[in-house]
Length: 120
Image 1 (spheres, one colour):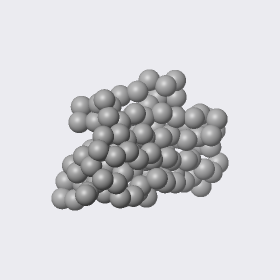
Image 2 (image 1 turned 120 degrees about the vertical axis):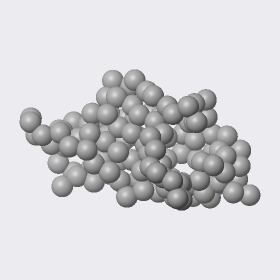
Image 3 (image 1 turned 180 degrees about the horizontal axis):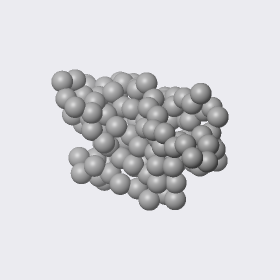
C-alpha cells in the first residue's frame, strides 16, 4: 500500500505565500519523478511543476518565478513554495509521484489533493 499525503493548503490573500508538502508512505523502494498538479473549478487538471530524483526541475510558465518545487529524497517528500499568489492560482493541488515498489514495478500515484484559495 502506498499513500501520498498532502498538507499546507488554505486561504491566503493575493500576494501572499503558502508552502505545500507531500509525503510518500508505504512499501517503497524508491521515488522517481514527483510532480504537483492543480485543478481549478471548471477547468482541466494541469501540471504545475515537476522534479526528478536528481533534482532537475520544470515549472509551468504561469508559475515561473513565483513557485519553486523541491524535494527531500531521504524523507520521500516533495514541496511547493508558492509566492506572490494570485486569485487565478486558486485550485485543488495534487501531489503525483512515480514510485518503485519492486524491481520491475513502477507505478504513478496521486494524493487526494489540498485546496488553495487566494482571495481578499
